[in-house]
Amino acid sequence: MPLDPYFHAMYLARRRDMIAEARGILLGALTSAVTRVVPWRRDAARRALVESPAQTVGTKAAGTAVAGSEAAHSPTAPPPPKSPLSAEEKAKRKTPAWKRRNAQKWDTKLYGRVGLAPPEVEVTDHMVDVPGHPAVRVRVYRPLEEADTGSPGPLLPAVLAFFGGSFQLGGIDYTSVDATFRARTADARVSHVAVDYALAPEHRYPTQIEQGYAALGWLVENAARLGIDADRIGINGTSSGGNIAASVTLLNRDRAGHPLRLQVLEVPVTDLTGKSIDMAPIREMRIPRFLARRELVQVAEAYLGDRARAKEPYASPARALTHRGLPPAWIFTAEYDALRLDGESYARTLRASGVDASAVRYQGATHEAAIYTKVVPLARRWHADVVTALRTLHDPDVQAGRI
Image (cartoon, rainbow, N blue to C red; front, side, top):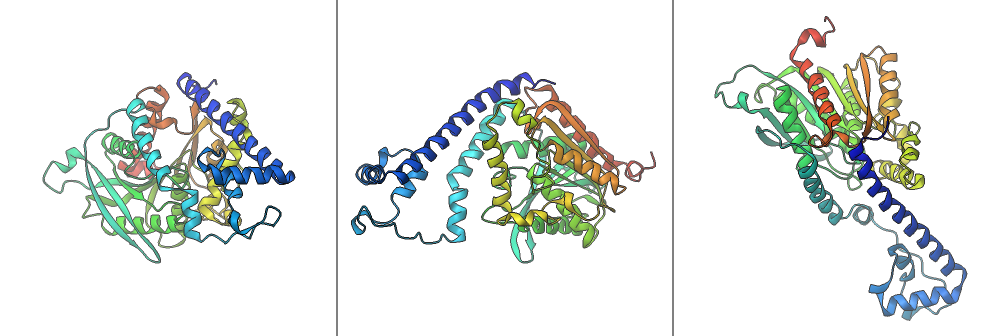
């Protein structure tokens, strides 16, 4: 099916940006090669940088040119070895604070144009201790009509939820994330417990998994106080959050075995080895393939540090030896998404282990389609389908497979 018209216009602009980026990378690589081969060109570039650093184009080439002090080395002397960067310095270079600030500002601006205003719900924040890892903040969303009664009332189902953002961006304070949880809480009448897990590369795997597992334990332990039925808890995650949700589900089965009744995974990445990456949508959108693949590889490197860890089952839940004993799964994928096979193959893997699992591919949709509820009809359908899945937590017969 053709790309949805709204997404088509958006990706024309995105493709222009990526092509410009590709040209810049190729030009930078060519310039770097020339300066290495032609010494006088290299030295001229160094002198130009020292004399007028503000006019230098290409930060990667500039970083090479200024290695060492010009006053201390002759033009023919080899450059001194670079001192190794600390882990903290590497982390700051990979995900600078300004990048995260800009991402959050852009999220607010974008959602204001494409997302529906969320309903009012009751919101409370809590801190959860995580043994051996940083404490994690969780935000509890509760339907307002339940909170306004002034009496305990019936206990509600709940879903432990994980946002997306390539493991490096995002958070429960992002406008689109907060609005999504508010809308689902109100429409499904299911409390959401959103986990503000630590971001990579400052905090790498398995920190996020351990934080999610600790949050689940905290939720079960405090369920009655929060007005939640501990026997009707599900788990949800989007994109990188889908990876974390699936991994926490495995970890819970292997450890405590808290009663998870449902998992809802949206455009999840379930195999960080890249074996399931589908480049066909990238080709159809005419996005430079090497840029798309480089971005996907960088995500795994930022999260894992050592990409060899991608074979571990809690890093790539699709690679677990068995998936028996996991809760029923609703998996949503997008037609124009390189991760579409990650979700669909995971559904097949779950069914092969006897787990009730379904996968729905939204035709004409992109990876981030679900937030465009104001301007794209399929996004409203996506929301309605997630709400339908969450509402099954209200009915124990549905969860038991009796109807």
